[in-house]
Length: 167
Image (cartoon, rainbow, N blue to C red; front, side, top):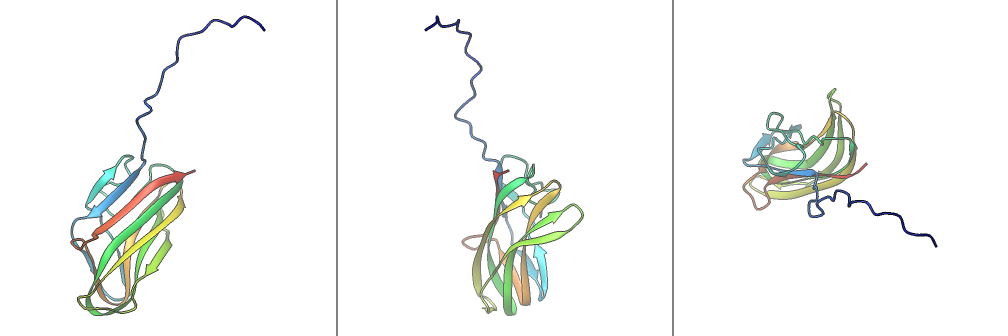
């Protein structure tokens, strides 16, 4: 066994207590809508509850734009109120949108088949999706029949979240 070599100075150490979350959680402070029959509307977000990688910008309030390509966990929740009609085939939709305005519905959750005037239904949509350069997520409500509003003041409110899940 040979003689051990000389020891050099210790290298630079990182701060093990700092973890990057790399995500956003946005909220709408007021009701969104109403949307009339056979139309959809994207949710316009009013504030970021937490954000650490510039996913959301008030200048483009409907967009949740990840800072780099990769796999992301994305979700959307809201309370939907029937305003008039019967409202049927209500969907909460998360769309992937590209810079050339090509929209792909990632996931849609169909709510109650009959949402009468004054009745509320809560919905929650979650998925993982690969996103590329110059693409973003939008959340929207769609009603086939009747008029609905997304409620900000109900127990659950209107929120969306997005976080990095991997390359």
